[in-house]
Length: 90
Image (cartoon, rainbow, N blue to C red; front, side, top):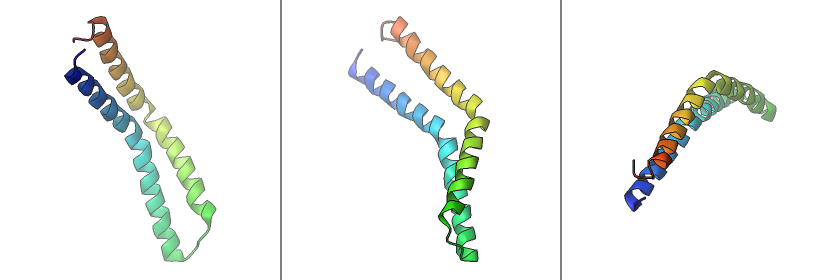
């Protein structure tokens, strides 16, 4: 396997990692922002108010986006196994 192929595999790995993590992270970011705006408007500074909705909605987003995440990881795994079978050159 050449240096260019290794760099390509590393690039693909990072992109897959971003694609898999993005829905959950963006959900957490959006909910955190909405709760922070709500807390600012109402001047309620309760710490559990940010934690509980974020935890529940991030968990719900993981369930919702699980087919997409699994499909992305499966496609990546198959492409890596195809490269191994081809001797690293494909």
